[in-house]
Amino acid sequence: MSQLNGAYYGPSIPPPKSYRRPSSGGGGCGCLSCCCGCIFNCIISLICKILTTVLIIAAVLVFLFWLIVRPNVLKFHVSDASLTRFTFSNNTLHYNLALNVSIRNPNRRVGVYYDQIEALALYDDVRFASQTLGPFFQHTKNTTFINPLFNGQRVTPLTAEQGSHFEKENGAGIFSIDLNLFMNVRFKFLFFKSHTVRPKIRCGLHVPLKSRNATTSPDAAFQATDCDWIYKRWWIR
Image 1 (cartoon, helix red, strand yellow):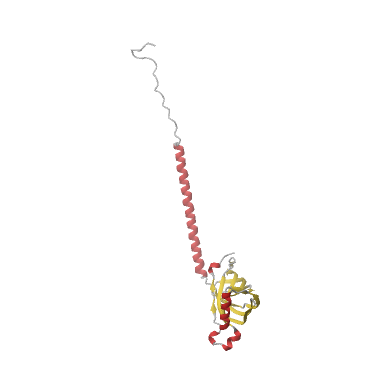
Image 2 (tube, rainbow, N blue to C red; image 1 turned 90 degrees about the vertical axis):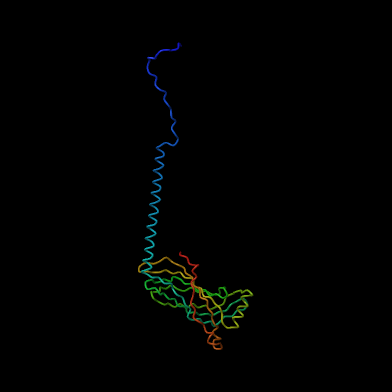
């Protein structure tokens, strides 16, 4: 080909086209990611607002319920105990124990259904008798009496330490006996009834042997005893 020294009068030569490879993160995808983030934040914010509103409403309702009902704890009290027999021989405990227990409902608007009360008698943490009481309903501002009676005998092996403790108390004529109450109860407010709750009560008693009361001082007579709640053993069924 000959070399051109003069001007070129042919058609114009277009500039070469530049080719740009599309990036992996295009503008459309970035916009979609931003929209998804906004929607997620809106959902989280809405959930938090709903939960906050529900908690506030629940707190207000609980406060109003307490303000209207003013619930008070039930009170248990052993007012009298009669122990006419309490002997131990050949790993067998012979007993005759009668108790008078008062249950006070101090509430003005809440009644109590006692579906079942299981009374257990224990000596030195060893159960030797039980009795099932109930059912009954206790009205508001009311005191109800129950009378557990334990009479019989039971094979009750005692350790050497427990046997020594028994002999010591037998000599004094006063025995340390525990009364435990396991209850199934429901509470009633107006027309509403609660689920069954199962509270437990413990009464630590010092009971004199009745046949010896005539020969002992008046201080040896049974002293009325308040009972304690075993809060850690509560559960709702």
